[in-house]
Structures are given as structure tokens and as C-alpha cells.
Length: 397
Image 1 (cartoon, rainbow, N blue to C red):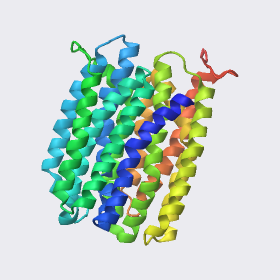
Image 2 (image 1 turned 60 degrees about the vertical axis):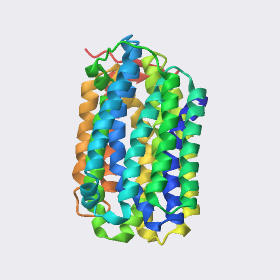
Image 3 (image 1 turned 120 degrees about the vertical axis):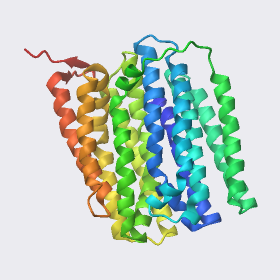
Image 4 (image 1 turned 30 degrees about the vertical axis):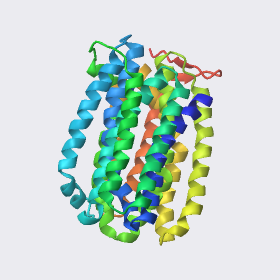
């Protein structure tokens, strides 16, 4: 549990500091800036797509394929791909903001900031993943805490000293970029380029295709939902603010499960117990944030509670299929497990085109229910869980 909390702490910081930053910028500079969070929300899945292949996949490849150069090779290729994709996005930022039905003059400067920040955070996350798999969790915690406090402090202090958005953005990005370069230099290892890209994709293919689907779902789904008026946009943004950090933090159960599976020390009962202990903490924090922050916004209570209900349903059933999905991918069939995830993603994607402001929430719940049923069917058809928490394959004649 201690390891899970250390990893979840880092993930929480990387997610919560941007949330807190948009909230504070909304109070200091312009209340509308909180909507930057919703505007750039789909773009975080480009981050996760690249992280899945070039970080998670590369680290698992190092363990399973005994390729000591996989991690650094993945880091170099992943950084190049991130620079290319986010660079293209920066050149098309006007078109993106317009597509998302938001005002260009209000949001352009901080939208640019958000894109560059995602690029820097991705490079930083590559290093954190490397440290997790090397079991240097305390060092990763220290780096993460420094990075996020630096990001928040510089951003807020400069916004208090000047209202020039370009100056605020330039100073903040320079500070976190320099620290990231320092961390990369400290963690750099000499290597020969050796990367089996197909293996990297296969080892985390479920998350890879899941994040590709999420990018499309939220790109079109949020654009769809934002058409229904400011009350829906505000409620959707508010619920995202009080649950997104929790979802990102919850990814720690996936990280620890894959580490243990790659090192052949996985125990299902232990991972499930720890997942629900973490869920209790995260769910409590969501309710606390709801109670504390609700009064700062002119929210429609009914609309807000509907969006929150979708999140609660997904929180409760997520561990029941997510941990088994990790096991099936690495120990059973990556192709079949990924195919099942693609079906769930297509179901959710289809719901995002419904002409309703609740399209993303409906898709989320239906997809989770499908995964709960299908993953448990596939798992128990081929495996049994022993009383000590270990997993045994079922012999099928």
C-alpha cells in the first residue's frame, strides 16, 4: 500500500496542480480561464497515447524482453514524437479553439500555455515512470513535488505581479522546462538504440487504444455538449475539476499491477484490496471538493448532480475490471484483451455523438458496464483466483 500511495501521490500532483492553477487564474485574472481546463481536456490523451507506448511499454519491454536499452530508446523517440505532434497543434491552435466552440481572443494565450505544459509534463512523466520501474519511488516523489510546486508558485506569483498573459506564460514555462532538463540530465544513462516498437505497443495496447478512443470521444463529445449553453459547460467543467485528479491518481493501481506482473510477483487479492482503499480516499476527496468549491460558481444543482452521478457509478466498478484487464493483457492475450477494449471504446464513442449534453457521461457508464461484464467473463473462463490471491489457469479440454 505504501508503494501505491507514493505513486498515486505523484500522479495526483501532476493532475491537481493544473486544476488548482486554472481555479486560481480564474480568480486572479479572468473567471473564464477556468474553461481552459475543458478546452484542452482532449489534448491530454495525446500525452497518454505517447506515454503508453514510449514509457509504459518500453519499461515493461525492459523487464520482459531483457532489453536494458528499451527505456532510454523509448524516451528519445517519445520526446521527438511529442515535439512533432504538439508542435503541429500549436500551429493550428486557432482552428482548434474555434472547433471547440470557444472564444479565440479570451482563450488563445493560455491554450498555448496548456499545450506546451503538456509537452513538458510528458517528458517529466517519462522520467518518473523510469524511476517507478527501478523502484526509486522516494526519488520520484521528490522530483514530482518540486516540479509541481515550482509550476504552481511561479504561475501564481507572476499572475499577481502582472496581468500580461504572455509574460506569465513565458516565465512559468521557462521555469518548469529548466527543471525538467535538470531531472533528465540527472537520470540520463548511456545507451545503444534498441527498441522493439511492436512489443512496446503490445505490452500496453489496451491503454493505447483506450486513449486514442478517449481523444476522439472528448474531442467530439465535449464540442457537442458545449453547444447546449453555458450552464452545461460550467457544470461539466466543475465536475471535471473535482474528479479528473482522482481519475489520474487512480491510474496508480494500473501502474503497480503492471510492475508486479512484469516482475512475476502479482497477487490479485492484494491489488484489489489496495485499489478500494485508494478509492475510498479519492471518493472522499471528490465529495470534499464538491462541498468546498460549489459555492464559488453559479451552478445548476440538478445538472451538476447528474454529471456527478455518472462519475460515481464508474468509480465504484472500475477496480473490478481494470486489474483483471491488466492481467489478461500481459498473461493471457494482448490481442483479445485489446479487441474487447476497442469494442467498449466504440460503444462509448458512439454515445458521444448523441444530441444531448450528457452524451459523454452516458457513454462512460455504458462502456464501464460492458467492460465489467466482458472482462469478468473472459477472466473466469480461463482463470481462477486462489484463496491466497494468486491466479491459476483453467485447463480447457
